[in-house]
Length: 323
Image (tube, rainbow, N blue to C red; front, top):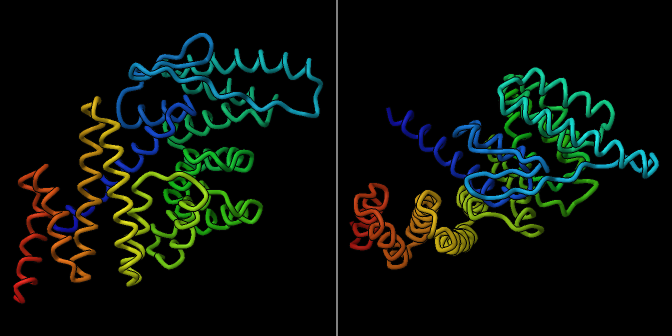
């Protein structure tokens, strides 16, 4: 029973992490937003406009530009871009109507004509992954996108999930490390490698990549929390405390930014409490009981019946008394 409870907590945390990334990067890609909403909510929450933009939960999302082939003339690229954009809109309309086979055929035609059309590659990968339940077919498409645009963190995240689903993590590590050799300062790929290693409980291998992802890019607080967990497991308590504190500060700021959206506010409150609990535990393990108690009190003020915080508070009070 305890094991099933932990599995549920892990799944909840994974969902929250994914949501944070999607909220942060939502304006970058219509297709990944459709993917997230289709998997977790309802597809009718996205409306694709004639210009390729979308309205999602009241927010406008600009279309991502297609990649033109530099070997072709400007007039050819312009004509093909218009044609492929029209075909792309038709493919999106098929998806919204639930006609995934027609959407697949339309996207495949776009890619045949322009192999570097990133929107079509991404969307076709999403169709295979979500709608047709064929992750093995999505894999090479996502790899193509990342090979062309290794900064696309959303697709990196989905690529990692596909590797894990197919049990091909070692293949994924090799692919991503190859990209890192070409661009050692790539934060998205660094984070991807860190997450794969964490999934395999290889915390020592994960740490340098998580550190690089923070050094070379702007990451959400859960990445700091993951790094803090890795430091803690490796016995690097002072580093863990420092990173957990940064995660708490970031979660605090994100909570303030989301104060006008009740749904996001609730999610951010949950993430803040997770960060505070990890921070408090590490402080307590280091013997800094007063600071740990202050962090726990913040959780209890928000959620008076928070079982984790109450249990840690009781434990620290006993340790402080020498019990």
